[in-house]
Amino acid sequence: MASTDEFLAFAHELADLARTAIRPLFRARDAIEVKSGKGSRLQLVTDADRAAEARMRDAIGRRFPGHGIVGEEYGSHNPDAEHTWILDPIDGTKAFVAGLPVFGTLVGLLEAGQPTIGIIDQAITGERVWGAPHGAWLNGDQVTTARPADPERMIVAMTEPGMIRTTSGCAAFQRLADQALFVRYGTDCWGYAMLAAGHIDVVVESDIKPWDVLPGAAVIAAAGGIASAWDGRLPGSNGTVLAAGDPALHAAIVDQFPDTDA
Image (cartoon, rainbow, N blue to C red; front, side, top):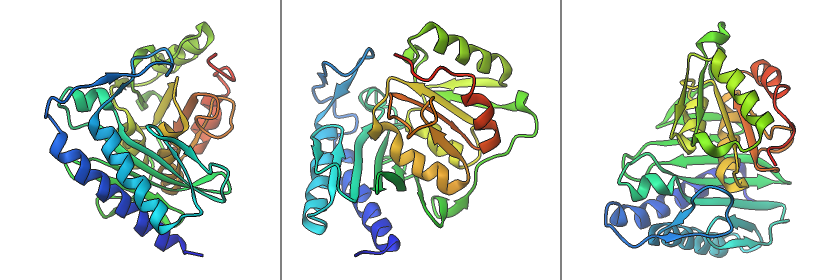
């Protein structure tokens, strides 16, 4: 069986493959497709999404044919395997379509159902954040999450204001926002990346899928933080996530949210 270092090296190879597929298509004005049945928010897919995931899946099949794969564009293969790769070729497709280099490729590895390795990669700027059981790094420099002494200095991130759909969920988020220094929207996967790097304190989201969050959850855990669903289970398991750099802060906030946003 491969070691953690070998799995991490391979995860970097997968992110590199995704870069080669994405870069030539950035700002190419290719046709976009509107997905259906993906939740309440607009969901898009492009040729770059499909090409990047196809390259990564092919590489996994050749290197680790017994491993599982769960990807946004091409579904699941052997998802109950001991080792399962989680792929989101472009997290933030709206940013990609708009020509904004704030999207990211997500690569994660689940071992016995738990996220242990994660990569968040920006194909255009070359920024990369990754995490494994021995720590987290941003562009080669080791990073850790922040521990804010003053809760009123919290920086909170969320991808879109309309992600939370229930009255109770919106009320819980508003209480958090009222206490925070500010809320930053439009972050997609970079909210998780910058939480791991100590620049953001809390990420709250809903209407998400496991591939949106599990790679980032591995990075956050490696940096000293914690990510869970609102009910405390695996992030994304019920479409929700609450992540914090300080585990004590996470415990205090998660109790304020309903178990689901359904």
